[in-house]
Image (tube, rainbow, N blue to C red; front, side, top):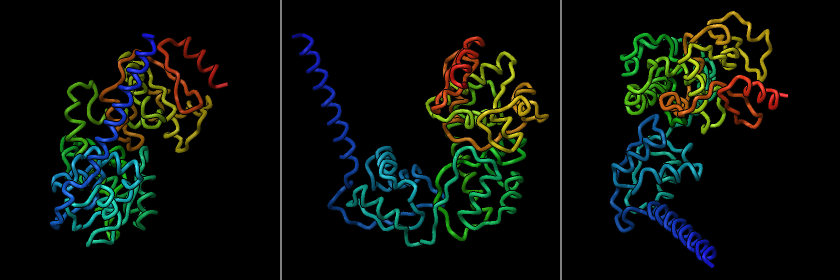
Length: 337
């Protein structure tokens, strides 16, 4: 009888939490004031991300909750269709109505969305920009190899950066179709700079690495970990290896050295003479191997509290982690057969 009562109590609590949660979300999706039709001119700047849009709307008192807006925009798939421009909105509009307006385009119009995914080299990023917007690939490469042409805090703080590989923030951006190559690169760098100021710099005091080393390692984590929930463990493995002066032995850096991606490396592959071959060199390679996403960067700054030194891919996107070499070999024999 006591067990039955316990089960009923747990079920009741779960139901209450569910209904409260749903009620909270739905309440924050409603109009701020259904009876207030006052027109509010709202400018969504070029290159705005979903978070930027949510902040603008919240400052204009057009939405109740930034997080709920972002959650709902992502859930409905509207987050990648938001457009820059000038909009006439009101407090009487629900989140659904606001999203509908923001995906149709404002008075300024003539915009397009461009997506830069995590883990792109500058060559890959330039091709993506060129293909999506019809820009000059060669000009983009030229710009990306000249960081000194831009003035951002992360560049001023770190004058040794020689290429923008590592610093082109992955995201979906809404940009003007007639934007120049310089304009588009500047949009990506602007987002990275915001992330640097707000998220990276405050965490640097707890890291043994320099800023450039953080981005360097994050670029390796980006390619080694497929699952976001494992990135902090993968980062921890590499950081633990650095602590004991052990070679990183990252397959991702070897693939970068070869210029091709292979799931399985041969002994000949890992023998390549390259400063990016971390099977040969000690420590980090000389520069990032791609532009990592936010999760990989934060994972390097806030790694998992584990003593693992090895990991092996299990074939389903996840990894088996171990701290002992013999255990690692056993796992490798099991999962790589």
